[in-house]
Image (cartoon, rainbow over all chains, first blue to last red):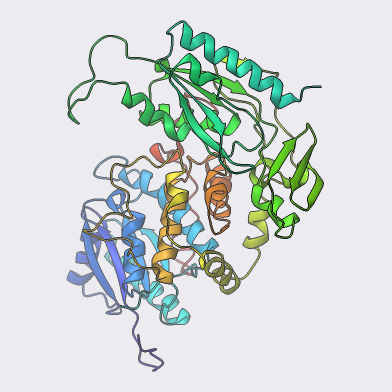
Length: 144
Length: 347
């Protein structure tokens, strides 16, 4: 893959958003005309508990510069506890990826409810900023 | 004078003989001598004659719990995946375990892979098993034809070699940092229980890496796995790996490519270790069977450390505590979650 060095490089961030909260939050951000960088590619999932580490790693493997997983706030899960299982899973995954040398800011987790459109815009801006600081991903990117 | 292991072997044989003779069990999972020095082969004794082949020494590095689900299934009448098991008691199987293997059996019971009342567990408090790679390293490539084991030293003999090695110097790393050498479940115990071992810092290997920078950690990780030939011996030796289709064999979607590409190998090792999160008992089988000498146990050790830190859990110590990733608490730590405060937003 060609190394992008230009100043106007925009990161590609894959966002796994849960159908019931974060996806609706993203929708609200759009409806409310909040501005945020066009860096994210949203994948709608039924629940943050549906997101497997396989998917996160697959995103990185296929060249994503960053990953965001977002679900309902603890206690608000449509399936009662999906996000709570997910929290344990991602907590271990994030620490593990840091251990083997993936930069901490590449893989991000957050809770966004359906009413937090502004929060969604902020999170996306913040993550884009962080990933931009890191530069293009190279460590787990497979060259096809 | 007989050694500790020789006495254990005698007792093991007599217990296995008794169990097979009384038809309480159909088979006994143990070890027999391998074809090379310092190599033991897992062995299923199905008759009293087979019992004579059973062995016990410090080279039993493979985790026998790995064979338990398959051997149990082999005694069940054939049935379709969704068919219920036949009525009435099914044949039992005996197995010999040390601390870590018994904890794996607890995990397997918790994950509904085996039934407690179908196994007869012979427990032995482990003295630590020997890493033959360490022995070979000490001998600088000399050929070894026989190894005799005393209680505290090994006598290694070869065509132009006679060496006495201190046993503890060549014990596996995971055994050296083992805290629970005693079996956590057993029906029959051979020898005495030793109780918890006091280790100053069982995670020192992990901490050495944690203090490095991300750059250094990545370089360490990549150089560690660079010799991997993707034989999947580490997966096959692992008693936690029993999925009908492993993620490495999935083709649609293909999570991990089949090539020896660095990224594919990295993904394999990341996911393999991650699948053991909260389940790995640090038995060291994966490392012992690796033909390339990759120290992939550090990866699972790191996860073990995190599970202990975050959820105060160690797998396999009790049948009643659920596995950490199959349960949750409302107040689980979540400092990794991006919040307003972490984004520097002062509302």
